[in-house]
Length: 224
Image (cartoon, rainbow, N blue to C red; front, top):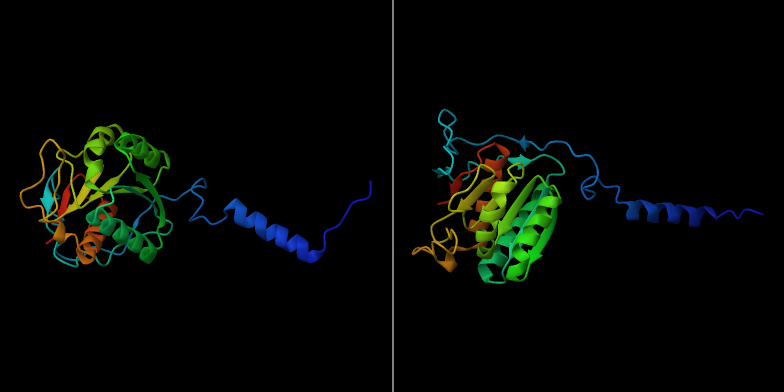
């Protein structure tokens, strides 16, 4: 049988297509081996007291900007877990997406649109084995409280809300005007949707991730 040789240009195009389909970028292909993430940079003075690490479920109030010198190492894998179409949730989602682009994190988004999807979507996010799951949306708080204690090896960051009794793998970044802690406790009397500004949400994401990267987990990071 006579073999057929492809013209050089056609062969090059075929190789390029195979590379794209194969997902050779380490930042996009999560099936490839992945180095343990680390913090790049150092926390500024006033983020927390190194001589007295916060106790589990404690609240710290970092000095504004003390988290600005921290970013994750290359190819930090993040799943943004979100539920809700309200303006507050959209603001949080936009803040996480913008942060991921600025620090070159590898970001994937998992969205739950119905209540019966909440726990399956959390499980889906965990199954991706990211370095961090960031949650945005009050509807996810009660489901997270049920699921997270059974997955202590997976780090979570809740932005704009918090779990009432978080385990060591769940950190929250919160502020006055947010702080929803689940249906059983109801909405905080200080809740104010107007406090969910792009600027405040951005600070909360950065401060929360800085805490996780430095092993300050299972706490609430309170943003002034």
